[in-house]
Image 1 (cartoon, helix red, strand yellow):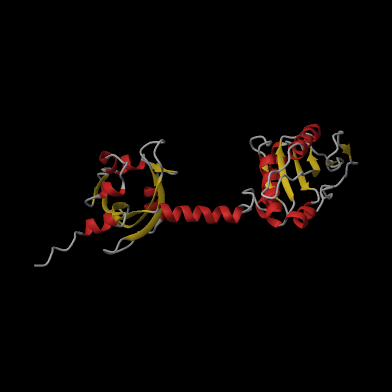
Image 2 (cartoon, helix red, strand yellow):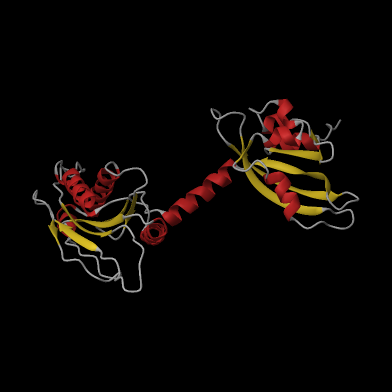
Length: 312
């Protein structure tokens, strides 16, 4: 005696999937059996209409209807295919469930979407992998801060923003002094631990809205928004003190670390006339000495090089 074949809805549910038919005219959605196993934290009433279901969707509630409007209508019985991804959750206290929806929609007599049908499936693992790939493409794997490419892109955005809103900002390079000696004495693992710890110490001393990235092996770039020359000097001393005042614990023992900073400040933009020269960029250079920073002569060009005393 052979057993009865499993229902399609049971198979779909075991794969984290559910089928649906959405009557767009009445807004009613009919799901396959066991859809509750795909949406375990979603109330059944929220799955019964497009309007109620859309209230659970993040980041754009209108993504399902938008998908139908953006795909061209198909002639015949095949329908117009579409594919979208979105997150759903019943409240902000519940974890976001990432969904991939694949289906077709069918036009009514007026050519507008009248019915849609398809399959949704839980897509948490793939979404997590995609987010990780995006993060790896933007961030330095050792420190978790922006990599050089995206740091430079953020710097370009800061320059445009300062010009548009006539605001000021500063750009700093913080270099770990004599990192090569740490490599030679303790090995690369210890040097990496020093770099990661310095990044953490800088990060904890940033304001909201400031940007930190790894510029090169031993150097970090910082974009400090709404920062005058005086603010820049104070911030530079704060960063230097945070790096030098406590030793870095490593597997080979504590390591004393110092750093040097080079910085430029872009002053607030003023209205320029034909006779007005380019705005100056003032640079400062700071070492580990506790004395105040010495000012470097201002340069009358926007492309002047950044002065830095960071060691290699």
